[in-house]
Image (cartoon, one colour):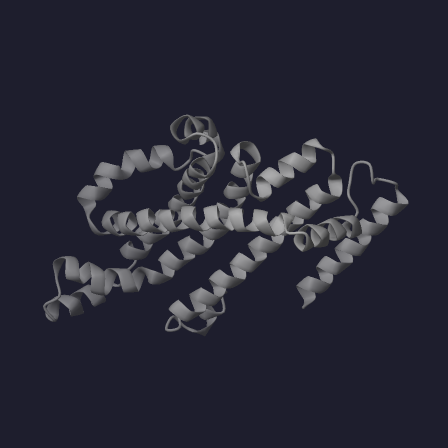
Length: 249
């Protein structure tokens, strides 16, 4: 509640500053942005853009999970795979996704495939790294118990390594879920033909500030909703990890 109250105070102060200092030609007042947001949702313009953005976002994030988790488990479990992949991973990981926009356009053309690739590329690294460290951090006693029970090889990875590393894996997914939205909207701004980012670019070029600010605010609200959904899923998946972890602390 305190966070919402603080946000409300900031909005009131921003509204007053824009009105008193006559900044409306360069900054949209919160009330104007809110009105543009309501109108855009009511006439279906923004709701359609939300659906497009979320569709691409989910596809990219799922692809990142499908690649990052198995690869992270493999790297964390086998020294040979870690040695073979370390140079490639350390070279690619620091490259920002937006820096790959020209190459992605060359490979996939304009539109959804390029954006999906950029989202997946940006999201895969936190998932991969947290999965690797989650697997490496598994208590050795669990492996000893598994060996005494006759669980070895791939079965040990599936039944011991992955469940024990799950808190780290979920943390990586949570970090990537926020990063993926940022990259998705940014990529839409530059190469998209639909979506919130494309909406922002069109209204920015037309100098329609309320609509531009409304789209920016909508992105923030989507990020808030996604974080809440991920936290809820985390509490359900990691119900056994303790109350403090379940509360996302």
